[in-house]
Length: 600
Image (cartoon, rainbow, N blue to C red; front, side, top):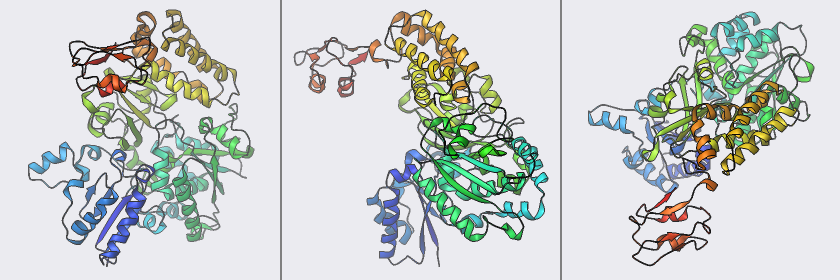
């Protein structure tokens, strides 16, 4: 009889740090101790606290182990699984739970700062079930919503339920899901398609990947429900080839769903037929745009098409098509089971439900976060995220990836929902949230994202193909210390033109990082242009390293690590840097124990 379950994270983050080997070692060690019939090791999806991987949780006591190494396995098995004694040095606590423990209170994972304010709807199964075992999904009410839809609801009532829920697309645009389904359902009967956009391409984003890795059946079930609602018998999941774990688990899930009769012919004994196929994307960011994605599925070069006609009227292979992203679909079954009122009770009036974010950058708790819409940026950064490391100050947060904008510290109390972010000069996007501290140069950040969009432009329309490249050239000029005030004016003028004239959302939103940084951090642009100085000390052409003679002890450590021999001096006397030789690598600054080297 199984008395203990050990859940080991099998998401990409933990896998990259060795969780598969740890899981295998656990199985061997448990067998060697003769308790294999009492302890079961389960590989799961992402737990969320990616920075602390590899992660495991021992149930039923709920002990959370972080940063586990393979050499820790014998001790965990011997002490915890065999003798029932927690290995405290590996157990995860934060300041909040440690304070509660001192008060004599029982604490669990949900009491930590990272989890206490989260509401896991999309991520409800991630980290709790084995995504490669369909029975575990079924045990968590899996495919119950599909059964309800096919046996108790008409296609019209399904669409009406989605309309009442107010679910808005989580892929970035926030278009009402129910309306999209309604438009496709209203088209004449015939061949129609359901597509899932799993081509997550924003730098730093891993929300959809984690859902596919941790709960793939939630997406399959939702697509079947959507197929019933609009009269479709065929679905496609367009997933980027760089997601091998997600692809592997989707393949397993589709095979299992077919074997159980949840996909295929006469589902749940009805006359409804629906099947799903995978299509792998080659990593083109533009294929996240719905018409480009459909063009790619058709086997053509992934380029956007003019709209109208919209996909709900003429989409994949010229037929009515709906396209939703992974996170949007992961909400569907829960809305069907719990009702639209349950969903609208979360979040805000115009942005109901929750939102999943990939929290990264200069933040303590890098990871996957799901919060109710309307949660403030401050709550996410300071409480869930644990604040800025190394005593630095919060400077800005980039929401929406290359299509979004940078919100300054003065807007840290902005509620995170579709309309509030747009009003603040950014956008929701798919859910990447990159935190920046005082050492970040905002001009350099704008250049980073613009460089990405220039590289990812499909080249079909001139405003995007040429306009973004001209923007990048101006930013390069400013960062090199060769910019003028007129260049700043040119940036704004060109941004406005590109936004209004580009064919698809890639070009229309490409200027957003430039515009938002100009709006909130114009002083940094002016410093680069007028003072020829980078306030953050990031842009190499605008900075130099200097040794403070009052702090230098003359230890010579800096000169010994300088790769070009730019530092000279005598022992026990202040050293100096020859700026004509210095390549600004920073090696000297890292080596100095007396903080005598500074950027000026």
